[in-house]
Amino acid sequence: MLNKLTSLLKSIKQSAGIDAAAYSEDGALIYRTSDFEACDFTFPHGQKDILQPDGVPITVLPLRSGVTVLLAGTGEAYEKYAALVRAAVEMRTEESVKELSPAERLRRYLLGELDSVCAEELEGSYKGPFDCYVLTLVTDSHTKLSELKNFLEAMRERGDLIIPYDEHSVAYIKKCGEEDEYQSATDFAFTLYDNIKEEIRINCVVNVGGTVHSFSELRDYFHRCELAYAFGKMMTPNGKIYSYKEYILIKMLSEIPPESLTKYLGTLLDRDSAEILADTELMVTAEEFLKNSLNISETSRSMYMHRNTLIYRLDKIENATGLNLRHFNDAVAFRILTMLDKLVKNNGDKTTK
Image (tube, rainbow, N blue to C red):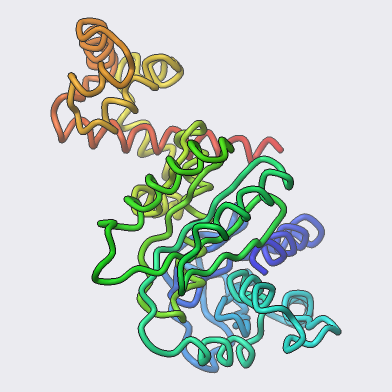
């Protein structure tokens, strides 16, 4: 549903010039057009119009899925577009939901394509404790997805859910409990990835949403997997495991208006910082150093690099940016710098398209 909704809002922006935003049930920003100012909103029951911070009246459209759409404007034309959005997003297919297979029903639930009645009915069938790791796995072909799904089916244990949801991806809801041998969802993801690589030699990316404690939270954690994948690809394109918790900061930064992001980036850029950010070799070294908890020995070993070469590169980064990555506070500042740089460039790429 979210892909359909964002595509529709983009189309309305292009054809009618109407800016819009969409928020999840918990108030998190899902999508906004470039000129819609992102901020925190509350949605009092029955309230039709609110004001955007710059004084523009807003039409509020709550959807059955829990998503709320905001259109920047009010009046008859905006009501018509609101009705169009509702009809397009919530249109039921002729196929009865009750006739769907359990896997297809779960797939539609994760994607927000079940209406509230069917969703509540499905949630009711999963009453009781529901402690599970929520992961998604992405491959580069449909054939490999089938092989990957067969592998997951073979290692599935009682209570696990395996839900293919598009041509390249499958959700894996792994049941866990007090006797669980894994310390966290991310710990399980690393073990799972190693097993896949060793047993079936398929290239895939594992996205970690976290540990969910009730079935009704599943959609939100599935959405976290999607965000982890999107932000992970932006920050470290060649990564194999992306965890939502690692990207919560970039999620927060992504909700800041582009012009403010550019301003903040400017305050962190120092001397030849831009040159360093464009140097792939140095950036890979910095990322590996951060990943290894600022440990020079571990980083030089994992990169098969002489210790002196690593120190030389870290010194070069410090001379250009003024940030010594061997110090925790500077390492945090460097991480924020790289996030801002990626977000600003990403916004620039969207603008030119």
